[in-house]
Length: 190
Image (cartoon, rainbow, N blue to C red; front, side, top):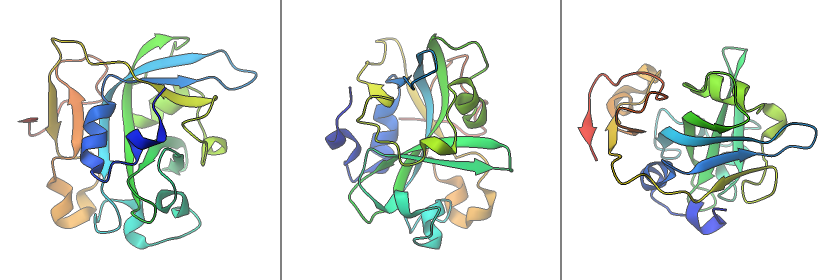
């Protein structure tokens, strides 16, 4: 299992890259165990990043982002889709990594390409907001990338409102993995 030090790295983009290949485990009481290998992430660097929720400051919704690293930040978008992020960096930074897609490993029979599909397939919702990802119900296993896999980056998806931050190459994915949510518009090998 990944320990808190992994998430505490002040370089959120580096954490987003290093999460690729790790295995997300959901072991909630009353649900079958579900596991998926992370194949796509997006880094949200903190309050200075106009695409990050934390750019609006500390609010009831974002306060978890400013807390200890290694906790789940789960929110609802478009009134119907949940998104799972893991808080990174030092306390007060407001950075987090969005988990965009996983490759099914165990107990998953729904699509997992895209953050809303990922959370639906793994039964993650707002009740998981604030969950310790170094705990026993929602956590990551330290599984490596395969030797033949290559990491690429592109602009994040759906953040056109974020001015100069909209084109920042902060989306990371495993090249040619069929579970990545959508092909990038611009590629840059990492």
